[in-house]
Image (cartoon, rainbow, N blue to C red; front, side, top):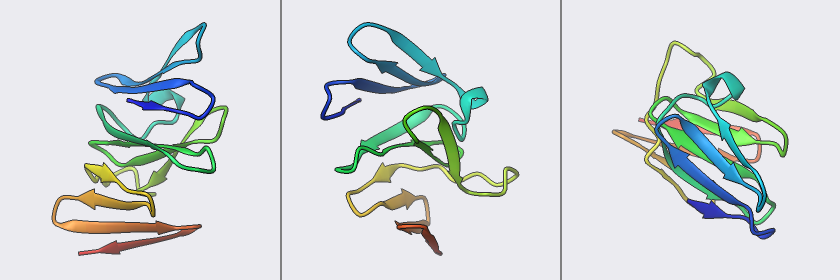
Length: 107
């Protein structure tokens, strides 16, 4: 679970991500752009961007909808277990670093 600076709540769940804005609840699923389920980890950054890590990869919320950002190839899956402030991601036996628009995968 994460909370934004505006007080909105986001929950990673088995079916995707649930968002509560103080009035309404919204469920986002892979059909809304999430890169798989269940969502294991979520992170909000200082710029307000929201990331969700699942058993299949990483997604970013742009304020209106979700976008899968890693991996690009939908036939591949990477279980995301952690997201840190500089956006390094814990992936079993690998390390992924996102820096601006650059994605580096270390094996």
